[in-house]
Image (cartoon, rainbow, N blue to C red; front, side, top):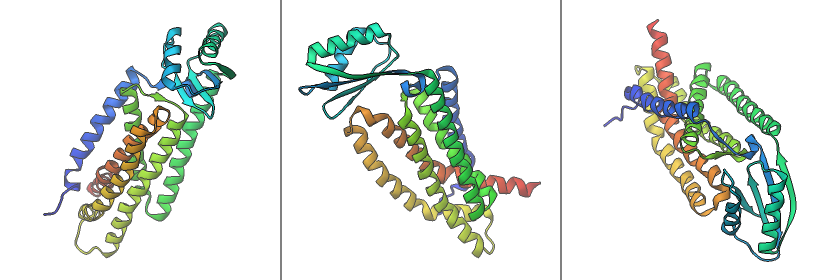
Amino acid sequence: MVVDIIGKRRLWMSISGIIILAGLISILFQGMNLGIDFAGGTIIEFTFYKGVTNNEIRDTLGEFGLTKAPKIQQTEDGVLIRMEELPASKITAIEEKIEAKYSGKMQRTEKVGGTIGKELRNKAFWALLLAALAIVAYISMRFEFRFAIAAILALLHDVLIVLGVFSLLQIEINSPFVAALLTIVGYSINDTIVIFDRIREKMRTAKKETFAQLNNEAIVETLPRSINTSLTTLLPILAILFLGGTTIQNFMLALLVGVLSGTYSSIFVASPILVEWDERKSAK
């Protein structure tokens, strides 16, 4: 039995469209939960003479009525706390409380302003844009321009789904999130190029098959490879997500959603876009 993935491409595109639309509506009405890397905030570092857990610090900070949950990271001999922007009086109160309660010493306090956050947003945007342009140039040279556009639309699909999930769940976005997006772009394009390579091979030896049939054969033949690669990638991601601690959870969650979305787009989005492009062009 031949699996007809291309024949049902409108169904796969509709599924993607619904998920992306839900994410865009959430971004429009709820916005993104920007961390202090983007929105600004306060960073405080303490060292202690004995071990202090994140939960102990979190419980102590809970007494100060913070509106956003602080991010607490263990350091070699203390903790690094990232939280919303606080007035000097409250920072002093936190310092005195933690030093007295846990026999610690505050090493530094920094404020990350909105200007730095805006600069970081701009740099993240340009990093993604430059990556997209480099991908278009590479795929256009190696394949054809239409392959490059299909790959970029598949990558846009992945980025929008990750952003939408983070907006729907109001998960905090910080600078590692940008690194996660670039990792997802690299993973997804690699999977897509494997399928494109198989399509190109088939185009060279095709006799009577249509472009849609060639695409479907290429997807079906590379399907086991795509699934196996994704499963072996997801296993360590899930392990780190559940066992790696809260500091790295958002990064790993972005990778988890991105790998799932990237696998889906490589199979159900990139090649169907190519076929749709080809059929619309032939119909003119």
